[in-house]
Image 1 (cartoon, rainbow, N blue to C red):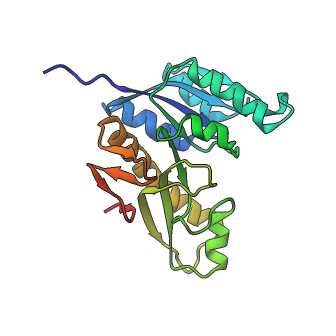
Image 2: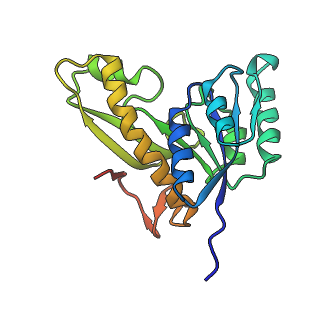
Image 3: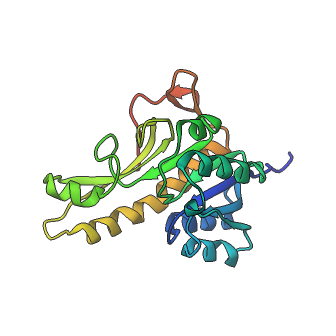
Length: 216
């Protein structure tokens, strides 16, 4: 039986890259995917250093060098395509993507978001959960569609909100779970178990996900 060829993945980052590190660690441990490049819109993003330490090619495309979102996204797509990835993952990429960009990679573009979607789309999710008096919070991995943080959710992890939590402590607890669920979903995609259907639903093992899977 021939050995499976790893799925090629490009990761987009803007910051420290802790979810990127989780993907790198999974790859190193034998997961069936391989990061072929890490691209950042921020030249000083520490995630670039994480990639370099593991011999993964890096590139910087500074959005400030472009007059508008559309021209940046066109250049970003050209750069991504130069690596010919089978999957693109957003790992703390702090840019709103144009519908044209999303359409180009539809069905092979994943994101991780620090809330139990559809709750708390956008920014400042942890403080918003605290302000709302939530007893439970978490993170979601989803396919990216044109709606911001609105694509079908594949896998979620939940954490309790503790009485003495602030945004920082809650974020740290959620981040630990993010590092588990993102590599798991990328593995499912690499194994051919996960697809985005023509009907806009996520399918796992051929079954439409009417609700996200929950991390046990």
